[in-house]
Every structure is written in structure tokens, then in C-alpha cells.
Length: 340
Image (tube, rainbow, N blue to C red; front, side, top):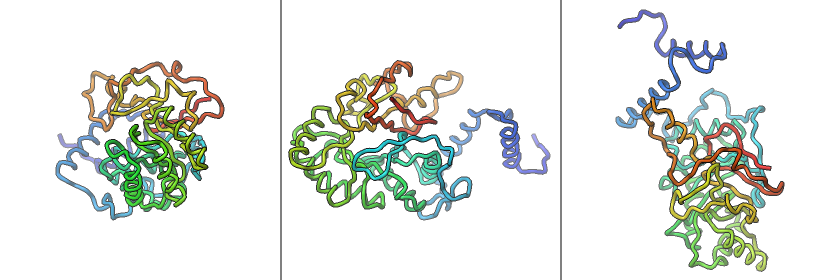
């Protein structure tokens, strides 16, 4: 079929979208959202298959914002923030998880939008992507020139390398990849019950004194071990755990999603530290995307796990003391979650 037109195909598509926006239409009548996303995914797979990367997308090339203007927070951004003792900046209550960004261009677009929506806190780890996720975040912070405007949460010493000596080695590697001299918050990614808590507290305090860590805590640590660690810290006149990064979710975790995962949801009132929750949105975005049988399932970076039992939202938001801080990690939601 041949269609005569005075404008290019891309121009016609752009004009159609513009008319839909002007008319306050949720979607264009010319193409559904599913068709649009399908085309984008197909083109991405095609480019990946042939190894096509444009010069503007390469790590050594400054990437412009999508709108072409300098990166700034929107004055209308609805983000709320919470303080964690030891961290200089208040942390946005919705944290960007940096663990599955596939490329510089993808990470840049996602990080830019999150920042402009008021988000300032990025969570990553030594183990994510073999270090590539830390490198992407470090590249973005350097090229955007906003390191002092954001808070970096880093994690290290994941099993089987959960030893005090590995904390120092991996922290230095992470800071090098991130192109920064400090982690605003640092979590031990797992616990090792064969190591006395005193050894972990001692090495973490060394890095606090050296300025390489602001606040620190444990990811997937039990309340009992954190209490033991903080008791030792208090007796020794040292810093203790200021935060815990366990699962605190929109659903109840039945089985660990990954080996060693611990949920804070059932024992929330026993935590003496801020809860920077992991998998807080239960990957519902992925789950809901598979509830439309008329469309074939799409591959997603993080799919819904059978380890979660989904429950209705109002039934799981618990009453919490005003002093308790819960910061959900994940960027699938359009708004921050806040418990009172």
C-alpha cells in the first residue's frame, strides 16, 4: 500500500500524539499503548541483536536530557523525604533501584525523570550486574554534575563474601565505580552469623571516620543481630546501625525471593532503625502486566515471584508510630508511599 503524504512517517506520528495531548486524550486513537510498547521492544531487541549503539548513547558521550533542557527538579514534584542519622541529605521516600538498567541511554532517561520528580536517593550494590550498575550510576552523576544533590545507598559483603575484610575491599571498589568518595548510606548486603557483630561494627566505624560512609546498616539482618550490634556500639562509644534494608512490602513474603532475604513486615515494631525497605512494591507492575490474557507476556527485568502472596492494599498498611521511618525502594510507582 502506498500513501501519499507531505510529511515523514515519524512526523505524522508525532503530530498525532501532539493532537491527542492537546485534546487531553489518554491515548492516541491511531495506535494503542500496547502497540507502541511492542514496537519499542521489538526495535530494542533488533538493535541488541545486531549490536547497534548510536554515538550519542555511548558512555564517553554526554547524553542530553530528553527535553534538551538542564536537569532540574520540578517545583510541582510531590516527593516527601525522611532523615537517616549520619546521612547528610534527607532521603526521598521513593528510592531508585539501580540493579537492572541495561544501558547508558536507558539509565539516563530513567534517572533523569526520577530526579526531576523529586527523587534524590539511588540504591545499588557491589554485586549488581558485576559492577556495571554502579558504573552506570557513577557515569550519570558525573555527567549531570549532581553528586552533591543526591544520596547514594551502596551495599557490599554479600554471601559468600560476608566478612569484615571484604567490606573494605568491596567498598573501595564500589566508590571507584561510582566515581565518588563516599556512600551516603552503606548496607552490609547479608549477615554472617559466624562473625561476631563487633568485627562488623569496628570495620564500618573505620570507614565512617575516614569519610567513606555516612550512615550504615544491615540488609537482611535479623532484629536480634542488629540489637546485638547496636548494644556493642553503644558500649564501645561507636556508631551503630542507623537503618535496616529488609523486605517491607505490599504483600507478605512466603518464601525468600533470593537466598537469605528477611522480611521486616511482620516484626516492624521491633526495629530500632529506619527501615529502607526492599521489594516494597512486590513487583506488582510486572504482575499486573501479565493479567491481560489477550496479550502475550512481555519479558521484564524483574518478574513477579511466587514467593509473594499479594494482598489488598488497605489491609497491609499498618498503623505506625510517628517516629518510625519507612522508605520504600523501587521505582515502579508514580507516587511515594508513606505510613503514619
